Image: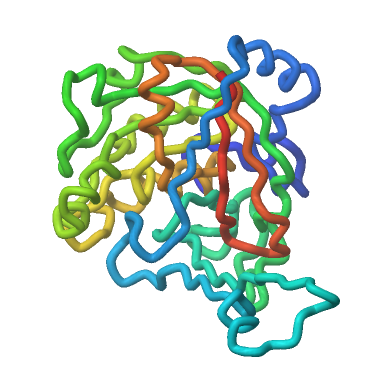
Length: 294
């Protein structure tokens, strides 16, 4: 059992959803009131080999099992005059595309979130706290556009967002989705090497600030919620690791590698956040196309 403040046992001994339990019927209906214009903005980056990604991670592989060239070469049509194209896609979500982390993604010691045995994370997936436990997420989203607040295009690689910086931009209520913009994906278009030189992100205290406000999800446009160094690793000690604070101790799901420039340009702080990960049984993550309804 972890010793610092946490949500273990709060939603029952069998809980595998953490603060997503806050998104009950009344909470969802209340969140829907954040939509004003009905404009829908995707918060996902493209899935492909040329988008922002962490160095060394297996990139998405997109193939066509059958395409127009096959028929031009003499392949038999499916039916009279009927032709088709078919995709084959392999995606390793972590570090390569917009995705949601499951509560089984990271832990310390021998237990997952809520005391579930870590030994049950096997080669075929996790028996507990997998991404299939999420279902759908409909909540009020709150954008923390920290670069705009500081008057810069994007945060520098070494910047660690403080609770004071978050509080100066917006506030969140229980069950909200905290969406944090660093602007770092913009660097990829200028230089992949610069993108790999490190990344800005939340400080440990900012993570605890969000957890104390009972957010349902923490989402960010960087690759790891917290900051990264030039080796693409976190510098924090174990007790200050953002994944352990949020996923492991508080049961707060994480969404990483968002594209937030369209949302930032809209100038809205509050909106309806919608996301539905794939029902990958026992998965540690899922690719995601989150939506903001303005």
